[in-house]
Length: 423
Image (cartoon, rainbow, N blue to C red; front, top):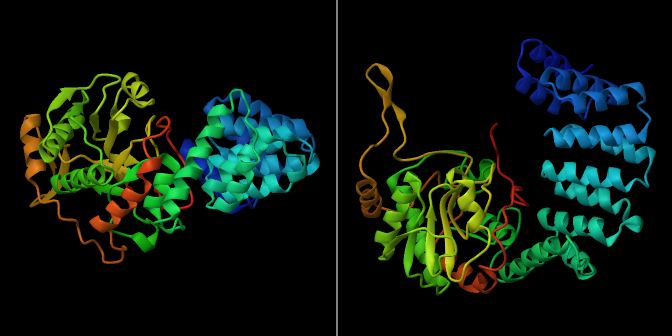
């Protein structure tokens, strides 16, 4: 038994289920299938996941049964431990290379883990047996997310029109490739081009890059961020720049009902010189302003999935590790964890850490502070490539013909540009 599995069992015995799962993650590539199935059975029993426990038990009873292995892989995916499904489904395919079900589940597991290049490799190992739908589509999609646009374009060109529930999937990758075509004319679309790939995958513009840790694993994204009026103003200035470069002339700012959204919306109205209105589904010629769309009610985000004419969705703080239900047309910044400027926090005082209460001032007063703030970019650590207004404007001007097309479909994968995340 590996040290990682021993650690997983120790943590499970102490009641730390989440810690045990994390330990198993580091063990899956170095343990035997039987040991992995036994550990999964223990974890599933502790968590009262009866289907997963039963599937793990079936593999322990017959580790060479491809149907049992595929069922266990499926249950691992269903219960959020796709990393454990990968060796299980790989073994199932080794025993039965003709199993389309095992191949499809393995691709899903790789996608969940953002291991898109490995999904492509798995599909290519069975290339002669791939059907257009869904396997060739999976090959196209994962080629895009791994950064292999040449393969993606070649595969997409051979995809027939499905004429069924796969129509949406085909249209989605088609829009991604169209955006990649326009982006490649003005940007590198390499594994460091966060703005270019954010546009290609989500259809949205990224306003600002984090000036810290670019070459130390962050690549323009924030991990933990204590937000400020200055950062909010910088984000709103980039909103104004994108609108101008794309020749978009909204007539109003639509205010969502949440307090953070209203504060930022009121500030945006001042910066852009536009009147405000309460948000209404289907509102046209308006900028819908959100601070963080994850806090918006589900019934509101549902109305934002489809675009209304001239409607632009702006989100200041877009979470890249847990994306909201809709993708913003313009994102101010990408973060993993953020503390709002007006949220309760702590500061270091004479007696150590002291609580700082939430800012209870009226929304208009906080919005005025943001609108009057100095939005000069933070110079950061000096290691981030320049993020100049002129470069952002040039990118937008040359790509806006493929912007604001199709539904606002979220993208949970970071794509070809990876960043360090912290669990």
